[in-house]
Image: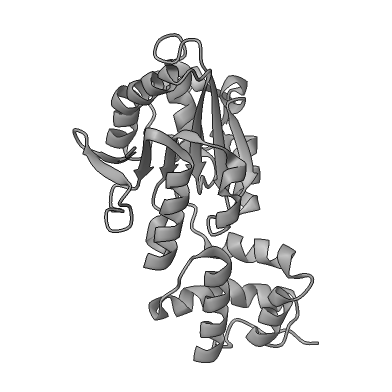
Length: 285
């Protein structure tokens, strides 16, 4: 079978079929304005596989060998732009206000472990940032408590990169020189690797946020971070994901979303909490 080049256009019917497939499997919804984006990402892969059409690619995804290809497709259509200490006001609010509050709640219920979930963690910048905060508080706020950070993503490729823990200076640009020296070992001219004590706090898992029935397998958390992800979901998926987060949080603990995201319309079980230059959502009850 002869593959085709990038000059072949995706029909409206092909777009809808692939768009709906991605939505049903991941909750990510591509509007018509994203047709070119989906076309360019998928077209290259079809050519590599020597398939003759977009419909053949969809049949591959739906078939017995589709699971592995689906992982590749998720890698292609998800955006992984991130950095350490992203949105500093929110991280500082977590460090100075949220962390002491939820740790006090954990101690009251007799917990000996503090648990965080970094949902859609991409290549590890967010969970490692949270690990830095926890390590810096291990002899004060977190004294006597162990820490576990569960970091999940739909893309196995970015999870593998996160586990390696090597980064260039651009993604580290928000860190102070002192914090960079404390938490990283320089391995090359522009290669910095997360120190082992940071890596030990983070467990990476492949997880699809629309796999609602498996949320419980991750356990219950003191804080969940899910930033700049909900914008990719429609209202129905947002409501289900937020409800999943609600069920996996201890009472009076926090869900932290992106600074431009609001969940008030979908989250009657949360109250909006205003910090100095950031916000968070505290679970009622």
